[in-house]
Image (cartoon, rainbow, N blue to C red; front, top):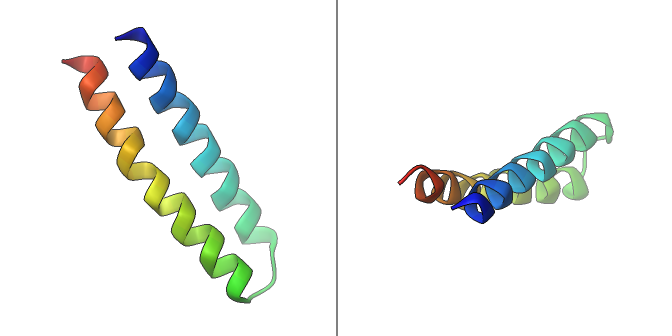
Length: 54
């Protein structure tokens, strides 16, 4: 239960860092790839958060 919440928080922090980092990059495929990875990290973070609540 606590581990699920910790994993969720870590995934949210990583996604937030990646989104903030991609905003500083110039346009290009690296920015698009990092943005997609950051958005995809939100899905397991949400699922671990729901699992931690239940």
